[in-house]
Amino acid sequence: MANIFDYLSWRGDLCFSVSPFNPVDNVILSQLSYLTLDDIVPGPQDKNGISVALAVRLYNEKLNSPEGLKTTSVFKEDPDLIRNLGASRRFGNCQLFGYVNHFDTAREIQFSALCIYTGDGFCFAAFRGTDSSLVGWKEDFNMCFMDVIPSQLEAVKYLEKMAPMIKGNLRVGGHSKGGNLAIYAASYCNKKIQQRITDIYSNDAPGFHKNVISSEGYNAIKGKIRTFVPQASIIGMFLEHGSDYTVIKSSESGLLQHSLYSWEVTRNDLVRAGKTTISSRFVNKTLREWVDSFDNASREQFIEALYNILSSADVKSTSELESSWLSAAGRVLKSLGNIDVSTKKLINKTLAELFRSASRNIDTIFKQDD
Image 1 (spheres, rainbow, N blue to C red):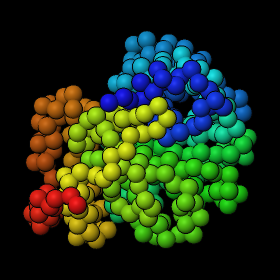
Image 2 (tube, rainbow, N blue to C red; image 1 turned 180 degrees about the vertical axis):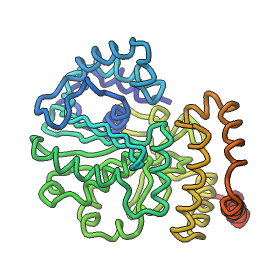
Image 3 (cartoon, helix red, strand yellow; image 1 turned 120 degrees about the vertical axis):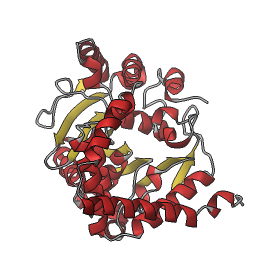
């Protein structure tokens, strides 16, 4: 059950010119995009970059500040990851540049990206997935009723701004929402940039509405998309994809498989698993049917209602719900008592339909794989 840390131990001494870029490198760089690197990595206005090794030193200084861990890390393994990257020959000399980190509660947008020169004539544009903020998750849920979310538009602008500054060909990718942004940006950027893109990596990322899948831009880059999902994938099965995906093994179970740190690797690839689990297929069939049972207006009303309840309860992040769930639950229950009758009816109706959808698809669990 080797993971990306084992991979760094095995291949960390080999530069990309010796051991070519592979799907595990994509996973590592996609995870790197989650680190908060404000005041460390230069922004799009600066043509100069910074090596990963130097970024590690500056990152550690920030990490040791009073609030460092909270402001610089999304996953608990992130500090160990960047230390290992900085110490490796493979990643230590990679150049980081073009870092952006936008967070806007009013616009309901959480967007971050950076570029990495890998020293093999390529640049990897990595788009960050959803962080633990409530706004970030709200933006994800907005995909249920919005054809385009603000981060997707930001991703296109980012790629079109950075591409003229980048030498060589492009790889783009990301994890979760980041993978979605990578595909969207590649689909809607101008054709000259599209032609420079050789690979688009989507790691357990949600899909799109049918108008995106059927667009000219998407079909132009469809053959370059490399989609990976874990066996128990939920998020990566959401909405439409329009292209094949590869199922890989994870050392975790259920939703915990969404973490890239749990994905199993070999010396130059991800470990294949064949197909998704029965439980994954049940949950995804249930959720698809549930979402399809409501029109866009009803989806929006339900999501806004839940968001307003959590906001009124002063819940700002999912990590807060996990670490102080008892206190947060009390505030949420108090907030529920203040909502109007029509909103209560909407929530009850929507949740009742979810249970009905689950009961209609329960037979999926008992069907045997071929």
